[in-house]
Length: 137
Image (cartoon, rainbow, N blue to C red; front, side):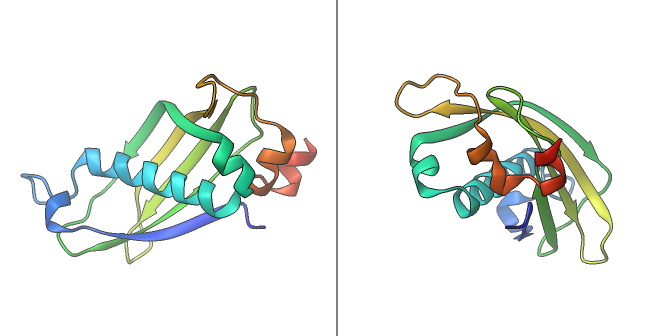
């Protein structure tokens, strides 16, 4: 299983702000979208049913932007092993020329759907999201 996940986003008319490019809030929504999609695509179905993720921190570096109709490729990965109920997730957005536009590092907490309380991330839940080198550390 790959520890990285990618997808494309297109700057539609409703994502453009008064400066003519993708609004900062849209980049955050796209981070949420790719993170959720990655979780649902890779995690075992019983874990998807049992847990939900919430963001507790975003750190975002904006280095560029795109305008209407332009496309970006987002790539996400987990840069390390979980710590209790949390792990960090990175997302990078590149334009068609491969230039890094936005780099994000977020901290997420795993919540038990039934109790709505944080739940420690066990190794078998994290395994599909981390590389073999990370898991061995």
